[in-house]
Length: 64
Image (cartoon, rainbow, N blue to C red; front, side, top):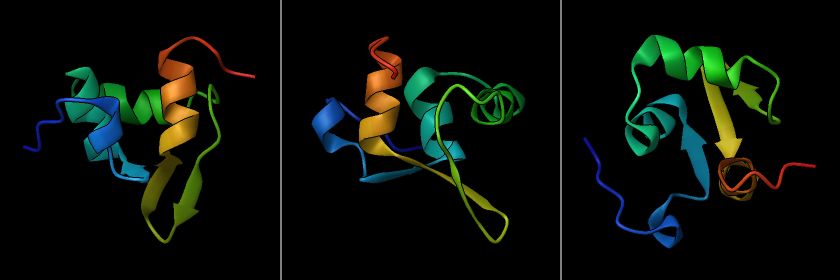
């Protein structure tokens, strides 16, 4: 498990596993979140990716 101290340490593109670790939620909850439409995701093959800036804005409640 990767432990991030600061938002600046997040990778530029987050995986579902990264989001799971950052928020301290389970795998199912993380997949439900990324598939909820609350922020833009990119699917590359089977991988679901979220941009760091998009995720931080969502986390801070500043989504557009």
